[in-house]
Length: 316
Image (tube, one colour):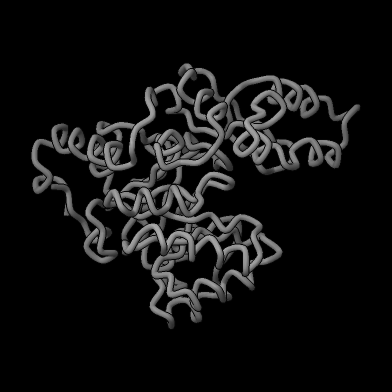
């Protein structure tokens, strides 16, 4: 079986994380992935401290396995949730949308392994200097907020730039892609889009159906004009947004911001995929059925081992 410092240090069966997807990564999905042998992650999003605490307590009722929390550092409640993860004994925190520097001493002092998401080698080096246990190098094939570099280009450069473990993310939906990440030097993978159709994922069925029906060219990146590009499934909403985005003489940035407010929740939680935004990566078309998280993970690593021709040959 493929084994690396990631699963060994974090007490996992497999070196795989579930992405901290807003309005998707709740206690149910996190516990499902952790029970399946990976690291489930709760998305703190813009939750306040007590809202996050409640979700953590739910997860503890559903699993006795390790799980983590993803903290969006631009959240107005970042200070609150930074304290909650310490108080609740969380062992892994992943971060995005900001610099975790102000919290690092507090977290590492509490025994938390901090693993920031990075889109570049410069940020990866900075996170290593701050004391990060590892970094997640996420390519632009992923769903949600994306950077410019692809996973194939980003991962090996980050691996060469730092001396801490690198987890590859973006464009991973089957064992061939998992194997490719290990051959690029990664010590683990983070998967988001494929877990959208896990049985334990509680998003609306309409959202899942959009993933299951997607074709290879069905994702689009919006929001570049505002400096916050997002990858999602094409649809009525993205067509309207794109029209507004490329007509700067008619629509202001403020109107664009308003157009994007609350649309992910609308799709993920209310099932309104016409007026809402369905975030997904470029591998959405490779996701073909709903299945338990355990089946997803076992399939990924069984096929990865077949491709690698024996895990010991390739993976440290």
